[in-house]
Amino acid sequence: MALRLIDITNERLVKIGFAIKQRDDVIKTLIDLMLQVNPFETKESLFLRFMEREDIMSTAIGSNIAIPHIISDKIEMPLLAMGIDKDGIKYDNSQELVKLVYMFVGPSQKREPYLEALVRTSKLLKQKENREMLIRALTPAEVMAIIKELD
Image 1 (cartoon, rainbow, N blue to C red):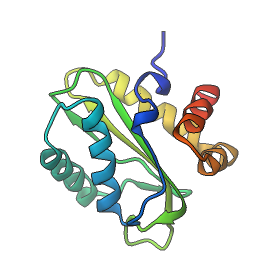
Image 2 (cartoon, helix red, strand yellow):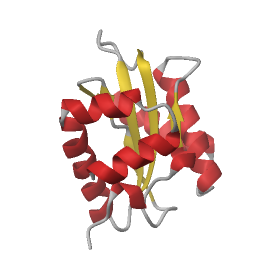
Image 3 (cartoon, helix red, strand yellow):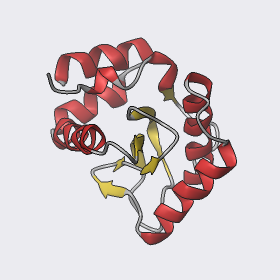
Image 4 (cartoon, rainbow, N blue to C red):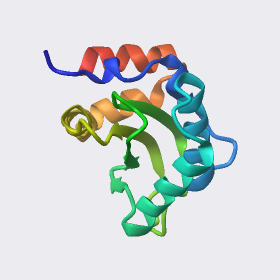
């Protein structure tokens, strides 16, 4: 049975709206959510690794989407935190604001489910209608219902 996105996230891992609309603050907020659900690493080490990844190449992929992702040897299943901001956040040097941030940590020892989750996310967010539904969502429960329906 294929791993679905609903299997690696939950309402506690969804943040709608950000007070500070800058990449680093959004990533720190999503790390906090992850660590509240599964305290597998320190906030500082995760943030450093996400920033190292962003320094190599921005994970903003266009269409108002960013998919920051890293692997960890301290986690056994992929973990997905989602940030949504209808006004958009300043993510990198491009002019396009990011409205959907899907942040993954995958297990270093078992990469197939992690890679599958990245592919499923790309397919889901490829459709403009799907992105618009997610951006319009008002609650984490609504986001989870949309993910469950679409994936």
